[in-house]
Each structure stands twice: as structure tokens, then as C-alpha cells.
Image (cartoon, rainbow, N blue to C red):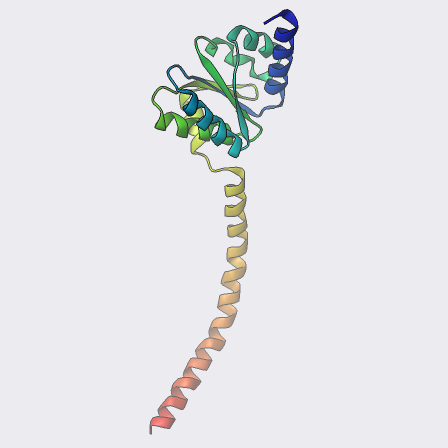
Length: 172
């Protein structure tokens, strides 16, 4: 890799670190190519990406970015998982780590906040933005549904009483 390629790689990684909401760093030593492809597919489906980069180039790319706190994690065979959604990359990485013992999450960053392994797992356990929106919408709609049920309940009771009276009259 010549200087121009290295500089292009540094610039690309710098752009990743500046635009990503979350970056997860993990060791991938011992994973097969098929397992790495599976990780990439899962991450892509969740809206994230996976990148294997030279640690030295990644450290240079981190300079001047919010994710600079992950520089000490870049030792050994590391992979970077990142996404613009704060939950996507940690969730996919954590699920993949559960299925593959050789994939070890080291930590990461969310903006200027450094994350250790436990913080990444905690992020992964949070519901996604779409799930939160659905819950809030459900909470907003629930009172209206209850009001509609309460306003219809007296009329339904009257109808049942009339029906029971009619049934009683018909039987007699």
C-alpha cells in the first residue's frame, strides 16, 4: 500500500468516524470468511457497515474526531462496526458475538462518549427508534380507544337489556 492509498484510506475512515453515530470495535481473530460475510450482511440489513482496517491508519483517522476515545482499543485483529442509528451496530455486533465466540466486542464510542464492552451490550438491549415510536404511538392512541369504548358501553348495555327483555317476552 503506497502513501496515496494510505491517505485515501485514512480520509475514508475519518469520514466514517465523523458521520457515524456509533462505532463498535471488536476482535475477529479466528472467524472464517463466511462468518465475516454473514456479519456484513446482518449489519447491512440493519443499516450499518463493517470495516476491517489497519490499526495504525484507523488511529490516524481518529485524530480530530469525536470517536478518538477508541484509539486504545485498536490493537490486534480489529473490526469496526458503525452505523448512523445508535442502536443498530451494537445490536447486530452483540447478537453476532453471542453466536460466535471468536468475535469479541472490545468497546466503542457514541459521539464523544467512550463505551466499554458492557455499555455496548446495554445499548444493544435498548429498543430501536422505530420500536420506541410504535410504543409512543400506542400510548397516544390508547386513551382515545378507551374513551370510545366508554361512550359505547352504555348504549351496548341498554341494547342488551332490551334484547333480554324481548327474549323474555317471546318466551312467555
